[in-house]
Image 1: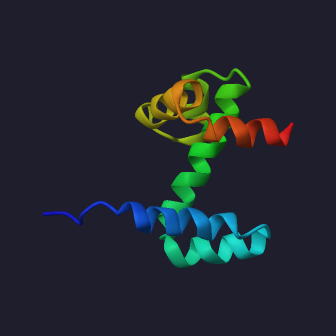
Image 2: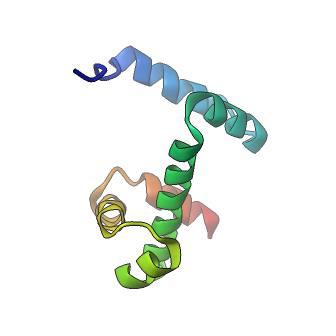
Length: 95
């Protein structure tokens, strides 16, 4: 049996923690405390995939260049096009 899902209170506390930080060094420190190196790497790769998809790169090209699985690319694409617009806000903020 796996761990239970986080409660609404736990999730809100996490979101507020990130919302209080505006310095990339502070965010990096929190990420390093909260996540494994692999988890941080996977999040960074997903964000990179979102940027590549938004730039019009094909799944095959992204997979070849990054080594990210087709399943992950498809998941990011779905979120980019139909998700909560988290990726979109970051991408548009970079422009």
